Length: 152
Length: 417
Image (cartoon, rainbow over all chains, first blue to last red; front, side, top):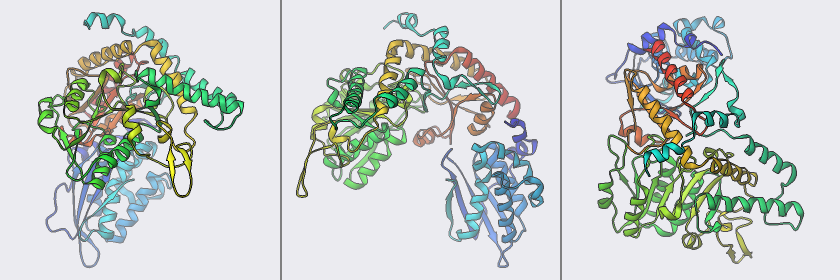
């Protein structure tokens, strides 16, 4: 098994302690709450998507483990200002890396998210890392009035 | 009973180490360290005699039960019914016909909720549960409440995780048609004052359904002494196979209840116009049952009874006290569940560290604990946490296991602290 310290890298601690874009966004036009029924964790992602499809603002709130909070924090940092299609593209790349379908070297678009790639060696933690992404995916797809999603 | 008397009969660490060798699954390393299994409240490991008996049963005696006039069918039926008698003896039921084999405690409670509940509950009736119930003793009642118009009422718990017994009297009323309570809480470890609760319920004319999942493997259960009407538990937590569980029901109640599922085995006579049903327990065992399950459970009960439940309880209690003292020396630890009367279940949170992260780092050192809401989300809400970490003990655990666990928690602090 991989060393647990490969999973818990400094960047993850830092984002867990000081999550970026944390809180409620006033007047979002997309939002969704994601649940991980396995551990009871949940988080809500709020978005403002412009008419041209750009995610102009994003915030999240909720409680979770270090992996899920850091993942949500890194995600919000990364997608702000990006077009919706690119967000979905990054989600796909992140998903593939977590599920060992592609390697980190093949997915340069992950940039800083690569620090989370360690979860691939901890199968019980993959859902922690992907919860925020499943949630934003649901928000973009059908979250005009708010929606819910679970990792099950 | 005097404390010294119990202590003098407790399983010793040396004995527990010897028992550990009976459990093949515990003889391995996990991530390069010796496996330390502290998750027996979720499910227990199986001793060699249970594994061997199931294998031998399939090799020599397997057939369908209660049908077929041939040698194997007789052998299988004898083994299956012999297990029923063993279970009756284990919980001191008055008659083995009061023992219904089910898949697990969840199915047992669903059976009572669906059969007894649908027949006896109506609009405005009340089902009294406690705040510390496992989801399996909440959701089946919610389902039957939706169907019948009955409502759920809840006995609250204190900050220590004990039932507020003084609230029971006011919550029990003329509309209370069932009380559902855990004997031992899976999330808190609390041992509930069941006998007092049963007396109060019975004085009100209300039957009591007990979730005995955590009690059956760790303390001597006597259903006649407790006076409860229904008692449910699972084989897999009692060192037996998974997929087999027990519903004890008082005979007069079982006889009066309608069937839960229809099919073969549960009938007396079938025509397209009308079917008459077999008596209990066959009435509740439609279809070919799990046959090897009871056979394995029989041996598991022998194994546990040979050691002695008082001795097992005292041993687990010793480990709990030892672990409780050690864990309280670690900064930032808050115990969830500090009742005076507790079984070998230690639930806690670590300030600023999520249980899932604790679980992963302990696992990396070979230590298996449970993290999450333990299927008791109302308990989590009560203590305002989303999840806890839970170490739970079995007859095979030792103080050495506790030492490894405490050392593991220091490593958690070193990495995440």
